[in-house]
Amino acid sequence: MFWKRQFPILITAFVAFVMIAAFFIPKPNIAVARDNLQQWFLIVVTFTMVLGLLNLLLVSYQKARRGRKEDRFYQWVTIAGLLGTIIAGFLGGGIDGPAFDFIFEHIYKPLSATIFSLLAFYVASASFRAFRAKSVMATILLITAFIVMLGRVPLGEWVSGWLVGTKFEFLYLPTITDWIMEVMNMAGQRAVLMGAALGLIATGIKIILGIERSYLGGE
Image (cartoon, rainbow, N blue to C red):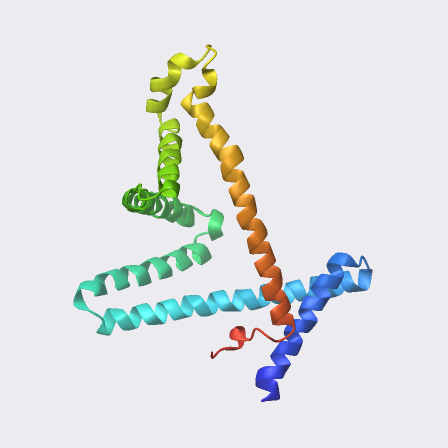
């Protein structure tokens, strides 16, 4: 039980204390220990990436053989894409070689653009459901979103362009949009980041003290 529970907790606490000490105490020995731990971390991450690739290959192969008939084609495409990219990386001159560059420029980029273009419709439908004026706060959100979206497209410049050069220039939609994004939106983002940072610190303390043990598996 010690090697399964207490020992990993001790390792985690030791690594955490070394990293914290290296940040606050500028000593060469502590810095060397920190650098060594970071190198070990990169080695572990490399093994997890290889394990993830093997798991993806195995799961896709199993689904291609025994999965639903309508999904088998996509599983074979996944396997072919994975193996083809690996072969292009190893035998085609690495990530700077022509084979890998062809896959990235002519396959990966068009697929990414297609996925993001499809996501735009999902975002639009989700926004339509979320921006219903059912309350005062929802109404404010709806009005703000409408102004921001209108100020980001040429239509907003065309509608309010006549205000430029007048005393009502502050009502120019792109100017209002920039103010909302740089002032109101930034203030909200900073508040969220501060709350997330406090939550991260609290979680780190719980992990160091052995209170949080979810990373050991189980409940």
